[in-house]
Length: 363
Image (tube, rainbow, N blue to C red; front, top):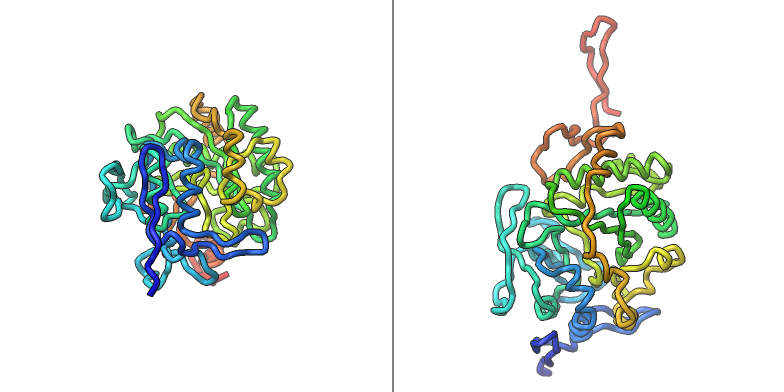
């Protein structure tokens, strides 16, 4: 049996050992050659400046694909997915190097965990050695893990919509933010969606930031009937869904410069607003093209220059009709939350003219 190859990748001031360096992580496609584990680690090191801008001092979960990305491979979403090839790592893995730092975070259940908190590029490179492709940082810093410093607007195309639709809605989002005196920074999701980030003052709770995202989404709905904040998929239609729940505690989005587990090794890539308006195929941004791109500068280089107030968005939440919306199913029941029953399964109530209950039927 051939001996597995191992090499070192320079990551800042450290050399990180990469075992099984020639393991194929992404198979070749019509657009891109195959990608090995070594190439993944080298990619992570090559985007150090932008990646660390996204991860530094943030609790970070890992999306690990130790056997690579293949058609039919599954990402575990819970303990029931015992046959999945990939999984989320929310606690510091065993065997972590001594330079890896962590921070304690609290899940919605009230349980706590020590989660990776990257402070130097050697940490993400070591994570790549452990099979991590996508980094999922919390929107908080280690100095205050209960007050987000980041609002995340996730524009998620629903069936029947296209990336072009997401680009159109992102342009509208830019207009609304600018009207409110807020600067947003867009990036591709690495798939069909678009993410817009806003640095905010860390003065509000996760619930406040979520409400700000709902208010913002409702303003987009008011201006464009191709936008929805409907939580239930059956109500979304062929529209762009503003996934407000991505601003909840322990809900994360693929970081800037993260690889995505999709053929062709696409990257969630920061762009300028002008670039986004002209972009037709986000697959152009991948492991092979992004390093040269960041060598010319990072479109998000100034994202930390100013933190904005959330108050203009919270006013939208307070002023626009609609009230509270559903939380994810793994959350405890929250104050004011609507029933967690999808509309098509609700019992239609029937009352007589005197207000007496006379039964119901499933719709």
